[in-house]
Length: 124
Image 1 (tube, rainbow, N blue to C red):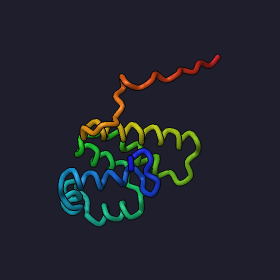
Image 2: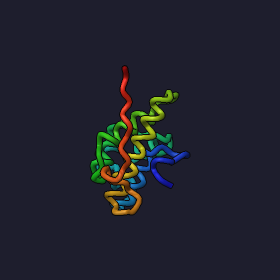
Image 3: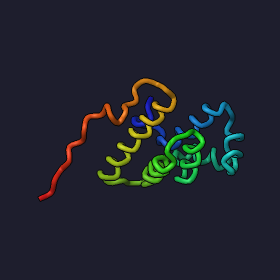
Image 4: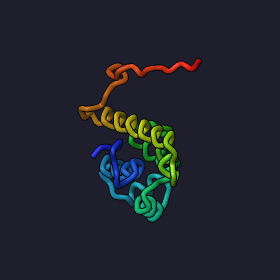
């Protein structure tokens, strides 16, 4: 299941699993490396959202864009997002998915030059 279409768990929480897998360590070693307690990491994962700060630290350790992941975590924390927020979150998740696929060397990541150009709307 991709990051962009993750229904049961927020994309930012999957970042914890990916960091643990990438570093071939357990959550205790990961939490120590991040400078936080193991229980804080476990509680974040159990509740289904992580703070933007933790998301940025995890992304940085994985070589991903920390600002992108902090934004995703912040938007996922909104309890009742409006339509614009949902659309923005969907776009950020897709960017995160593409960056993850590009870093891991897996096929399916669309490079910016391969994407169709977006239509620009003009206001009169």
